[in-house]
Image (cartoon, rainbow, N blue to C red; front, side):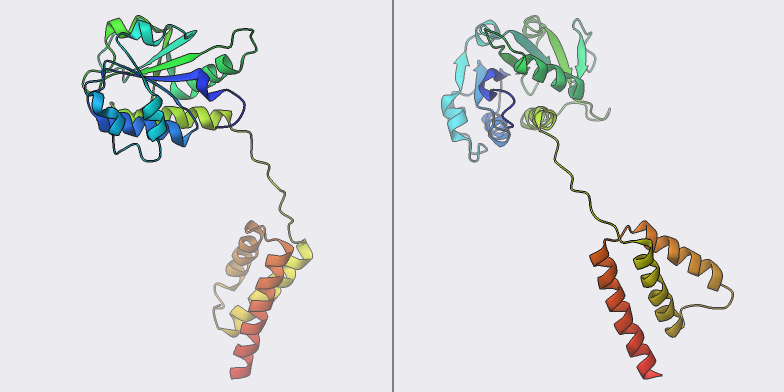
Length: 248
């Protein structure tokens, strides 16, 4: 996770999770993207700390905190966000699509303050999601766009997708080094040798000559070759042309 925010200020809260493997998968996703603050509200099976799906993320499970209620789990958070597949639920909250929601979360986490913000993202049980009572603790809701035939995601996957979007939004842009391009003269020299090679190989017919020559010239320019690439191709075609002429 980029150093723009303190990852401990983001809490992933799993509510009434039924399958310990999903808890392990969520922990692994958190570890993948540099987050560590996992909280659980009444997990169905307290053996989740041994979940084999938490590959490389055992410390996240070991340090996870268990709470009796959602209110207790979010008590120290300044922004609480619920996740929903929407379905037939009537929305009582503002709803943000994941991309827009991620931007809002990062703004909250990076805002300067004497009392740094702590954000909680709530994920409901695999069977029914978050209840209306759970959602009553939320400021707004987050939705991952999915297909109509299968709108609900696996819990571990949903956590991974949300955290990926946060990490992607927070990542600094990758500097792009301008790639030098071959000059028009270098490309035309390559074009000439390529056309000679094709003629020697009897690629052209009289009827198609003009149109194919134009297409080849345009093709080489669309490739945006570097000077080194143009030189390499030129040497290759010269060798092929020499071999073709030697046979004749």
